[in-house]
Structures are given as C-alpha cells and as structure tokens.
Length: 298
Length: 306
Image (cartoon, rainbow over all chains, first blue to last red; front, side):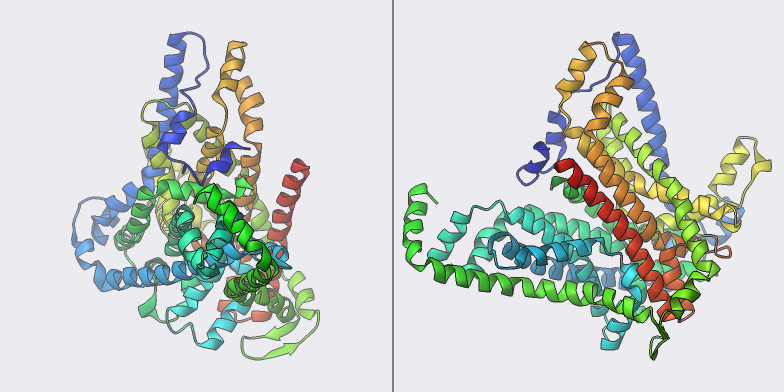
C-alpha cells in the first residue's frame, strides 16, 4: 500500500481524490451508461435524505412549542427564546470549550514530546514502552470505569474541570503519540544531529525543527479530539460532578433523562450542541478523514 | 541546510559521539515521562485495580476480600447473560454497518454529478454526538414519531409500532440507530481505500469485457480487504463500547434489561446499584472481549504481511 503512505505531504483533499481518475462506470453503450448514472444519482439522493433527516428534524421541531409539537402543527420561536432558562447553553458551551481546550493542549504537548522521543531518541526499552502505550488505544473506558472514577473522585478532581480533562487527556494520548511517532520517524537523523551540533539542544530541535514539520499531525489530532471530546457523554457525566461545569453534551443528556422535558427544547439544544462540531468538521474535513484512516498506514 | 554542511557537522560530531548518545538517551527518557505517567496512571493502573477489586466486595468506600465469590455470583446473574446476549445480537448489525457504507462508497466513487456534495452530506452525522443522534432516533421510533407517520402514509396504520417501548423490539431500534451512526465513518474509510485503487486496473478489466459485478468482485473488493478488516474491527469494538450515549438517551437499558449491553451494565451496576466490585468485574469481561477482537485483528494483519 505505497500510495497511502504519502499522507504527510498531500492531505487527502478534493484535489488528490480527483486525480484518481474519472468515473469508472461500466457499461458499453452511452445510453446504458447514462441510465446507470441516473440510477446512482437517484440512490444517492435517497441516501442524502436519510443522512440529513436528523438535521431536518432538529430544525423543524425546535421551531415549535411543546403544545404545537404534541398536536403536530404550528410554528413558533418561543422554544429558542426560552432555551437558556432550562438548558444553560452559554455556560455549557463555555464549559465544553474549556474542557476541550485543556484536554487537547495536554494531548498535544505530551504526544509531541513522547512521539519525538520514540521516533528519534532511541533508548533502551523504548520500543516496548511505545507498544504498551499504543496498545492502550484498545482499552475501552468502560472496562476501567469503576477504578478510574474512584481514583479521580478521591483526588477531588471531579469537583472542577480537571477530573474530566485528565481522563480525556489519557484517553487521547495513545493515538496522538502513535501519530506523532509516525510523523517524526520521517525526519532525517542528520537534520536532528545538525541541529544539536548547531547548539539548539534537543529541546530546541523538538520545538524549532520537528514541531513545524508536524503541523498537519497537530491539526489532525486537534480536529479528531475536538469532535470526540465535544461529543462525549460518559466521561463528562461522571467526572464533572458540578452541574455548573457540565459540557453541552452532558447537559443535553441530563435534560433528556428528566422526563418532564419538552421535545422541541431538546431538539433546539441538540442543534446548539451539534453546531460547533459540525462547523469544525466542515472546515477541517480532510484532517478528520486522515485521522480516521491512519490505522491503515502501518 | 546544504549537503556539505551536513557532512561537516557529521565529522565534527564524531569525537563526542558517545557523550551525545548518552545525552540523547537521557532526553529520550525524560520526554516520555509525562506520557508514561498519564497513560500508566489513568489506563494501565486501573486495569490492575479492576482485576483486584473484582475479588472484593466493594461499595466505593470499603473493600472486603471475598475471593472468587463475586465471579461465581456474576456468572449466576441472569442480567449479565442478558447483557452478553444483547451484545451478541447487536453484532448482527455489523454486516449492515459495513455493507451499506461499502455500497455508498462505491456509488460515490462513480463520481456522478454532485458527488462531492453527497460526500459531505454523508459524512456530516459523523461530527455530531451520539447523544444527539439518540435523541433524534427516539423521536423517529416514538409512537407519535416519524416511523409511524411513514407507515400511515403508506396505508399501513395497522402496523404502527412503539419499538422503544417493546422488550422484543427496542434492541432492533438501537441496532438500526447504531448502523446509521456508523455509516459516515465507514463510508469515509472505504472511500479512502477506493481512492488508492489504480483506475487503469478497472479500465483494463472493462476493455477485456468484464461486467460491473465482476470488476467489483475481483478488483475492487480484494483491493479494499484491509480497509474492510479495519472497519470490521472498529465497528465490532464500537458495538461493545460506544453505545453508551445511545442507550442512555434512548432506552436507559430498558424496557427491563432488553437494551442493556455489557458497557451499560458496568455503568448501571456501579452507579445505580453501587456494587463497585461486580461492576469492575463486568469491566474486565468487556476488556477481554475487546482485547480478543483487537488482537485477532493484529494477527490477521500480521499473517498478511509475512
């Protein structure tokens, strides 16, 4: 699989996808071909309707009052006007932002340092430690949920953002290390040695030479982790014990768990919670694609 | 940096090589310490703890060593077997969670008009939380929801269902939602795989008179095998460990235990019933299952490479 190893140079974007050739549509005659393409277009349109259904439903229902929703007709902006009194969206969007930012910062700093070390500063036992850390990617949080919760709760970190932040950081770090190690391995040893001899020191080489080369990997980790942490429920639900520090996703789920809540309100809240992640996704789509397909490049 | 200067530094380096190597190793160890601490303390150590606590009676505060009795009790607990059975049944959704994206990716790969817009639309749900997807799915399957409206408009009012409220159907609704949630990611994977396929291969086969199905079967599918493997493992592991949000908002494990999976049972046993020892034990079982799937994948890849 040689072509997939070029991910650092050319991110998978529209341009590279386009180069792989024009419509390989089988079928001999042009008429047959046209019919085939029309059928595909039709099938893809149906699929698009299915995939857009959640967004359509969220928009439609959020513009109703609960009464209008129950009788099935009418429209109103009342739900949107009153949303903040039931679901503190501003506070919770802020909480999500804080938790995401802190977690991603830790994941990046720890990942860059360790990735550089594993890739370029061979030391005894390094490979085993690397394998150990990377295989932690496979451990589902639920498997260690109970001891993890008790440990963090004992330190008191669950009364604040940091409880969730350190758990997110620990869960995101193995992938980040894997990615950065893969990246840094392609930096020539000579370049690093030259930097050392020129008096940069390892620290200087890492931040001034290696880091700038890893910018695409940094973008990939940031986008992927942002969406993962922003969308997560389990960690936030357990490790953010103060309701005032809940992320928007946790706030939404908590609201849904209380049975008195109106559906239009939940749909409006869903839209608010989904909007930032969708925006990030639309702007940085190619980094997300690359992050999700990284596993194949080994 | 020019080649000559590299050569020069190479020569200058030699006398101090061993000293430099020593320093390099020391810096190397220092740089991994934060990662080691983070992953070791928050992922490695709790695995050991979970094993230890599974042999205790533990309510979160006090522990009491009870040997294997937690284990024997767990294996006599019908709830655990229900959860495992639910997990097994959810695996039936995996072929759909792979097959539909495969079809979608192959269609996208034909590059018909507007395919880029379609691609963005198909990937869009990937960005949103499964909490949100679960809330929408709840509306879709609700008695007054979209599904029954669709049935009515097809003249099938008598077929009205309340899937999330029926013990026999709630898991099916959960499985369908899970399939929907996996479409974006898996389509993305397969499309990436298709982009690495040499179009001249398909072209050559077509000139030789191969039909669409034969091209797919003998060229496209073998080329995608690694991508399909990866998608398979990711989907199976998700089925065991990523459904928490969906279950939490859609059914809360019910009705009864009909949508309680192992991961949800860990949560329920720990945080609703405060039986931390038993919950830790369920976590270990979940860990073993996902580890077996993951190691199976590694061996598959290993077998292929050698």
